[in-house]
Length: 82
Image (cartoon, rainbow, N blue to C red; front, top):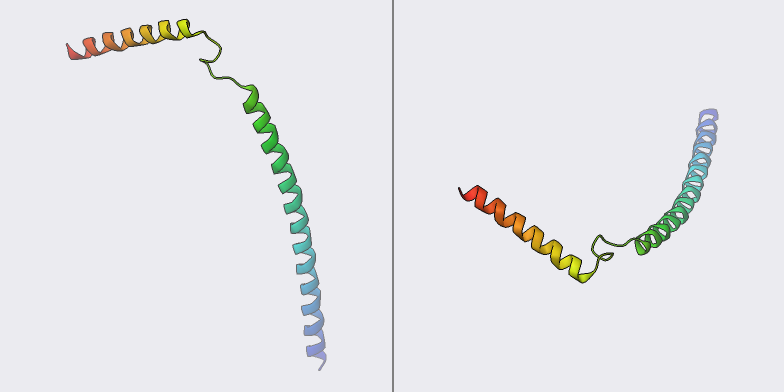
């Protein structure tokens, strides 16, 4: 009988440790979820503030840049076809 009581006590001690660990992990998960939400909102805020490279230049500058790029591509093609 003594062994059985020791085993029973050990089992309950281990069960309590598992419960404590699960509670701790749930708490940590909640904290990480909150932090994740904060980081996501911060990222969205930063992305809203960012502009792409072309939004800061005028339409005429874009057209001029496109012609320059097209010209460079044509020169490369001519050079490669020789």
